[in-house]
Image (cartoon, rainbow, N blue to C red; front, side):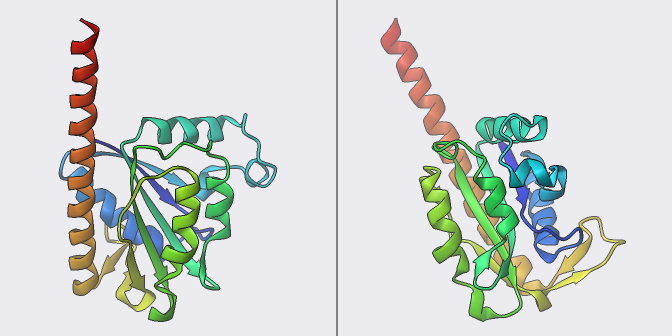
Length: 194
């Protein structure tokens, strides 16, 4: 299984990035190939001026095209997901997420912003023709502590770890189901062609 992990925080050190790295490690430990993408991987002008021919943007679009699923991590600012993330998602062609599974991961200062994924991010993913956006994982900043000595750059509290693992199990099952269905469908087409 191929997964693209998109870190949508404009900050170099972010709690949503810590959650994403924990999620990526969990998936890699179970055999998935996870390709990390960070806002910082792109020249700011390429994002702001929508330079679709930028090598970094072309590579990003291709990585998403080849992926079975996406992890999308973002902080919540003013009741919405990161504007930098929106700028990046705007560079994807319209049907880029067709047939892919997406697990949103968001962090914010309080529980008051937990619906930001449903009301702000999910409509954008739908516009990209994503048919399976899983129930996102929302974490309060106090559940995540920075620790540069930790492999993922920080630690999650017990409750968040449990919720994240449950979400990842659902994500993995959805990926397996879609991959199996795609192979079965491809096999069916081959049989019809004979």
